[in-house]
Image (cartoon, rainbow, N blue to C red):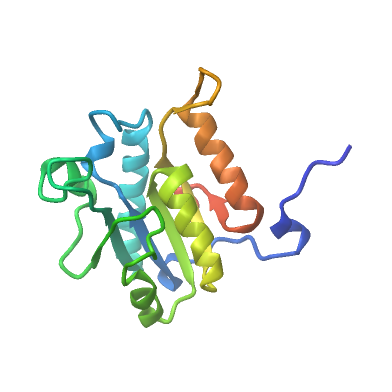
Length: 197
């Protein structure tokens, strides 16, 4: 029995990640909400550390950088006026780096992200952030429809445990790995953040 291949492999697609100076880095929802409280992710801190290293290399490489933050209701989850909705301090945007607020999982929906990416003239985007199965997945899938080539920095993403629908739990790492496997089939190149230079 032969090992399975992704649709991208079967199509002979170029699976080499882009050089950072030729790409846009889109950091999605790396907010304090995921560090404590009901949405705390088990692997948030290692993912934040990987994203911080990637951001530092991207800044040094002249990458176009965009921060996306989920905006919830006042007093609720992702309240952007409260500490819980703030972008994690280690990834705080520079004044030159746009912050795009969104209300839906897909970072393109109802935002200026597509317009701002198009203005760079770059077709390669690199995604990192939270949550793998939700906003990373939704954004990567939408990016394909928009003609963008997406790479996901796997270790700079994370997610949470989910109910399995049968009274049990699917652990966060399983959800993360399955989401990445789905995306790697057709929607994105999946790599480790240190491979992005």
